[in-house]
Length: 231
Image (cartoon, rainbow, N blue to C red):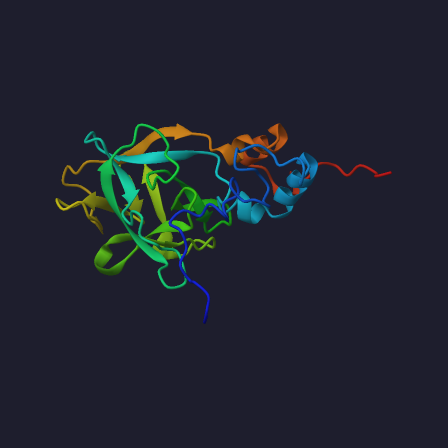
């Protein structure tokens, strides 16, 4: 659009649940009581649970994805490059030295995302605090793009305890130059696994009742508490 910038910072600080100025949570990870009460926030999340819970937008845990014992972790390769706008909705991934802790601008933290074929969480992997999910790119390369919460086939990545990072029934391997590709499993390749699992601030800010509903499968018909007559 003429006169308007289409670029956007690498991190999605202004739109993420935990950092939105007018969102559900304050940047500190605590409820913004002056704007939204705990009960109102719970009602909102119950109403839109197919987005926040079932599509993994509000995750229960975040983690690094480590490659074998080499001390390397899955990382967004864009660095400070602008991405995520309408002009640049893609990024690439690589394996870089694992960070000892969470950094504000890190691309090494991931969580489950996108609804599965049953409509529940989750069928993909998303870079935390961004809009980027792993995708199958050209020539079976592993890349990222804006998450599609409906869980399309090209975004269906998962971590398996024995086979590592999978796309369907194929494995993700790392080439000598650091690029990642999808191919047949086997051959003694190192296995990707979760590392440094933790609860994100946005989950910790939920009420105890809502945390239980996020962590334990519950039928939608039983999700809402009994109605109480209002005065």
